[in-house]
Length: 329
Image 1: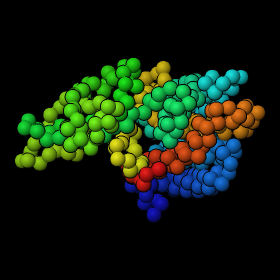
Image 2 (image 1 turned 180 degrees about the vertical axis):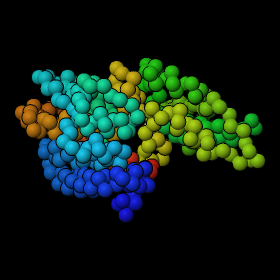
Image 3 (image 1 turned 120 degrees about the vertical axis):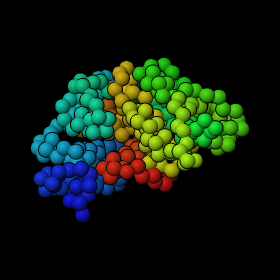
Image 4 (image 1 turned 135 degrees about the horizontal axis):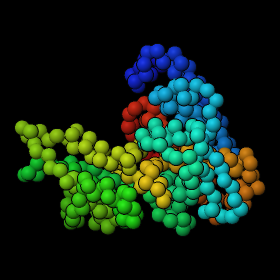
């Protein structure tokens, strides 16, 4: 069954034996680390969660390129610790697992020595959205979106209701590409309620957009799959599926990494954030205790307790090649 699964995921027959052994070992290691982390205090669990994530990333990479992880390979991240608050902390990219994981997820290359600010990374976590904003760290670069297909006299088109779109307005790396395919439209409260099930008080947080392309109906059959496929292709650099069944979020739009045009998402940010916390546990326990004695402890605790299951669902979907939707958080 395992070999059949790998064949369906596109591996050549001559790669199967190598890939199967790698994939099996990575998944079993990941499960062992994850289960042990779930029983540890949040002061210690990030280290085991990170090694679970590392093995899951290798499992995903092994499906696409088993030879690249069939040898000793570095983490691909390096911790640049400095004295100071959490806002000043960062890690940088190196050759190794993380850049390969990034390439599998985005199809692009992340350069060596790309700086990843810890606060910027944590901002991508949907599990701590409330804590992140409430603690005054800033706004999130992830925009929840609702997707609908509309049928009119001139054909069909898609409409999007996007929450907190103002966060994207200062990011031309996102808006220039977005507005090539979509245009903003006005929705009154009745339309918002009818099309998106949004009440008037909810509507204030949303802005509405529709595809610039109109799709002619063919014998009264709405080309839903083509419209959805074109929209996803147009948003591919920013698209992230939502693995949770949430009423007002069909998918997520992720703004590029801060101060770059590099695509980024919650999976990558959670992985890198857990690497950072694991590094503190190994090499800078005194600094970790300083953080956990400050107001930042609230953010860290919620992240460690909430984000692993979300990462697990995201990466499982990537491994399976399916957008599965699970029960709510």
